[in-house]
Amino acid sequence: MKSRAAAYVRMSSDRQELSIGTQLAAIHAYASAHELDVIRTYEDAAKSGLEIAHRNGMKSLLRDVMDVPRPFDVVLVYDVSRWGRFKDIDAAAYYEYTCRLHGAKVIYVQEVFGTDEEPMTALLKTLKRAMAAEYSRDLSVKSRAGQDRAVHLGYQMGQLPCLGLTRIAIDRFGNRRPLARGQSKAMQSERIAWVPGPPEEVELVRRIFRLYADANGTIKGVAKQLRDEGLTVPGGHPFTTARVDNLLRCESFAGHFVWGSERYAVGPLKHRRPPTRADNAIEPVIPADLWQRTQDRLWVRRRLRRDKEQMIQVLRERLAEHPGLNCLDLEAMGLRSRRAYTNAFGSVSRALELAGRDPHLVRAQHERQKVVGRRVGDRINRDIARLLRAHGIDCSHHPRSRVLVINGAVRMRLQVLWPRNNRGRQRWYVLKARRPIADFVLLAQMTDEEHAMRFVLIDRAEYRSTTPWLDEQLPPYLTPISTCDGLVQAVRSRVAGLHKADEPS
Image (tube, rainbow, N blue to C red; front, side, top):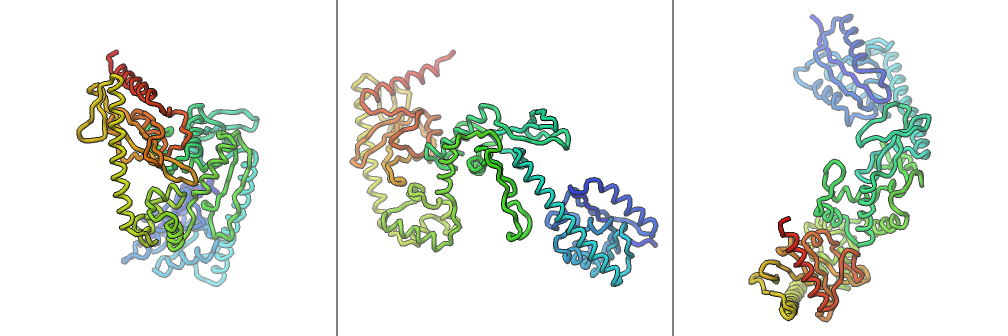
């Protein structure tokens, strides 16, 4: 009766010529010559032999060999290197011993040593394992040297950003051929270079950088604004916080290549090489001054790895200056994000409570602000209604909200913006917790003396896309209104434009 055997085969990118088929042919030939019946095959195709983490075939084999009853008696492998090129050669011996401990012998069908467990066989196996590990280390050094050289020549091997850059294939004669996203090069000798993408993609990338750096936006706010405008990356995927964050940190937009970052390196930290940098390797997409402003902002807002006590201490220091500190003030002062405090303490309110904030003081302050805000908002709403009626514009109050109904159909909602001290300067926060139930939103930028400094009239689309923080110097797409006549003219122009858009063509 033939003994039951299992075949284990592995192919990695460093030995493509040693295919799965070649290994199986040698294993089946050995099984026929030694009266073995191969009943199972475990395969790890295109998997590195440096570690077992991603080798599902070997992990499945080790699980099955410990079953009771054991499904096979012998494990057939092409050679020692197919079992693994573990940098720690004891790992290869450990996995082989695990099989033998549970009654399944591991046989390397192409090795010269025998199958008996003799001292000389054990010595030869150890030498073979050391040679396999050394081959892997030597190949890694040579591959890294070639990659470093390619990066300094302006050829990138990393993943293309989702926007703003495209690839071209360059052959050994210097001929260039554009590549579509996801398209592979035609020949092994070709090199891949990155060049600026289509003009509309380049302009969108520059706008994302400007929204973050110049408009004092947040990564989350920029992503939301792009989604509200219906913009997507190539392929139709929406802009997420992670995508915007990756774009803002991608050094390729500044013309620099970085290869071999530590987070992608294998092995202990002390053995990792520093990443390879090639500055000014390609044509930049983002101007140098805009890139630097963006990186400066990211550096200020970077997430430091502080423990909870350090986070609470920062809040204590801020509460000493501002006893009524709230969630919105965290962003205004450049502190850790609300999500960071929520993850660490369950909520921002709980973190502020642990830091010593008086909840009764905050509640009382909040109630005072609500009373003042309601009173001031109602007063401004009445003044605007009287102003519009005085200029012949039909205007009435909506019964259940701070909305003015103009000409019986067009709705305009007033939103009062109070000034805040944001990073040493006065700024106004546009609260966009819900969509406006109106055709237009009139933003009133207030002073500390409860008077409107100026107004900004925007439609629904502009309201969704505008930056959450407004400075004294408004973005170019927003028009300030500082006089009564200017407000009346802006309302008339907006209402006329809305009626014109509703007329059938």
